[in-house]
Length: 331
Ligand SMILES: Nc1nc2c(ncn2[C@@H]2O[C@H](COP(=O)(O)OP(=O)(O)OP(=O)(O)O)[C@@H](O)[C@H]2O)c(=O)[nH]1
Ligand SMILES: [Mg+2]
Image 1 (cartoon, rainbow, N blue to C red):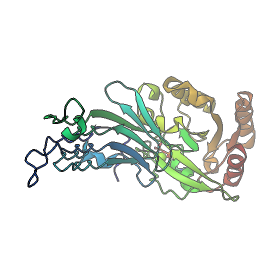
Image 2: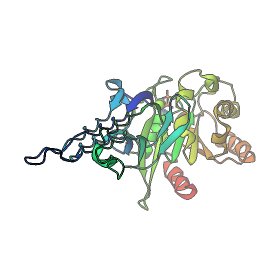
Image 3: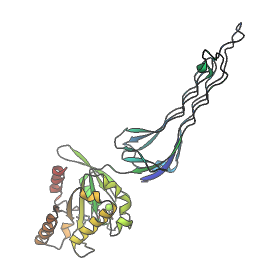
Image 4: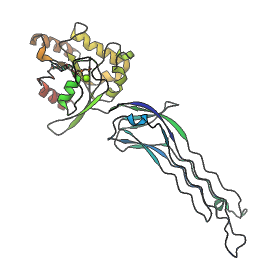
């Protein structure tokens, strides 16, 4: 499956049909009155969110969307048929921008939510419409109004409840697979995850939460290093962040330094993300060389920053019950 979370498309609404200039032609009435009908309205273009769509991959083959035109009016006061509305389906979580001005046209956060992108052109009035006391035989009608064109930039931002962040290889995808029914690719190499994964976690009380697993972050991610920053937008709208630290691998030689590295990268991208409620999960405890005292020290240091840390093993499942309990309480 392709995952595309940024794209541009063009939407064109239908032209209004032309109003008709026509005069009644009946036997025995040599000069019938005007009877030109109105043109039909051009079709609108709408954008609609659907929970069954997960990315913009389909727009690869189609980027141009044009609603049909209204039909022209006809004699005998027949109105032209309206053009058909064209609906473009996008994933829930899509932000729609005017590609030219950058203005946000809509933020589709609910299934079936829709916005009108470009209205169809109105149909023109036929000559019958223009009959007045001073002009009983108007020989003119209105043309239809032309449809409008809008270039759109679509950006998908997940609407997950929980975001998983951390260095590559920390075990984010493993944790996702443990907490949810998602089956992301897991491997012993950094940057295994190259596109974000979503999973749904069900708690004992039947509540469900969506969890987003994004590619690992590295130093410089805020400036575009690695893959992480391209996907940081997917945790912008989460309510709760779980920051995974790998107890067996500390590129800075100190796990707290590693914690700050990721925090700084996120700050550089959008400081609002770090204001979210968050906790640390110290992963891979099953192969940790540190003893319980070391872990306590790490926990204490994080606690001083107001952050709870929980040791777990996403592999063996150690600590996951407690993690679910904490999530249940904090969300
Ligand atoms: N021993 C042990 N290994 C683990 C644990 N959690 C994950 N791993 C292993 O660590 C490696 C990386 O796990 P992933 O879940 O792919 O890590 P990730 O954070 O998603 O990595 P990226 O997608 O590259 O950012 C895999 O070989 C996992 O099997 C753990 O608790 N204990
Ligand atoms: Mg991964």
